[in-house]
Amino acid sequence: MACEDYPCCGHESGDCPRLDSKGRERWTCVACGEILSFKAVSSICTRCLKRAARDEDSFGGDHNYSMNY
Image 1 (cartoon, rainbow, N blue to C red):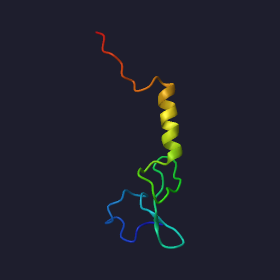
Image 2: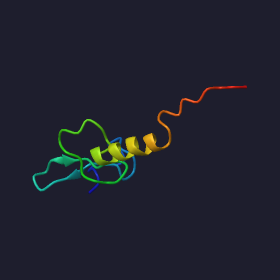
Image 3: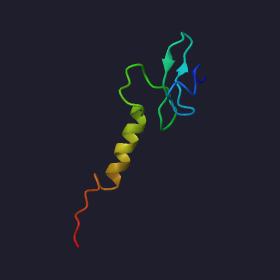
Image 4: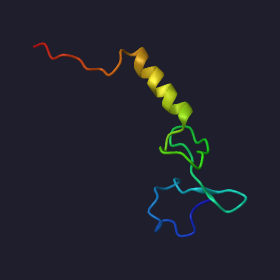
């Protein structure tokens, strides 16, 4: 469900919160679309954050390559 005042709401297209059965705004994860908890501090769910951390570790950490010219 889109915001009542889209596009004046300021959200990107398709990025408006959904309303639950009690009329409360529920935001979704920007990576997978899962509904976030009310206490979420990020727009990415815990599962996607863990997956990203795991993928980063498998590629060698923070990619801090030295510049040897």
